[in-house]
Image (cartoon, rainbow, N blue to C red):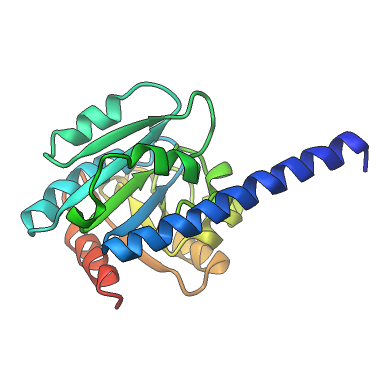
Length: 223
């Protein structure tokens, strides 16, 4: 191994150690405040923003206090869209970085009273590689997979799906048109993470959304 390669690995290890330390502090802060934090991860175009848009509105209708942090390389388009739900939303621009980090979360929480929230959603950058390595202090990490991406996506990105606490299969209304092989997709997810909870839905059509909301409320109760 070259000196340069060794140095790169040392720097990366130090960065991750620092991130993990801050993530532990954030997790403790979240738990003390009583806010349940979820980190939503997926490849681009999976439907995270639409699902989050529906989720924020529906949880507010159920009487929950919700907020969201949205990560993107550029633009604040998603934050503007989610803010229409009436929930507090802040955009995190990563300036080219392909993931969110704990320090970004801490910075963008400034001025918010966490005790006034029941749920905080973090919409990570669309990427199934880098975000897998960065703990954000969340209680639950949710990996999304759309029916149009291919049933082998969990096998191609095992680290992400293995690090997730739940998997959400999106765009189920397009399953037939995409010739989606449900049995194979679910088998591949469970091959990577046998005990993972899987929720199938279509945010656009409202299919399975109630099951998703019930899952969120159950997890917040610790069940």
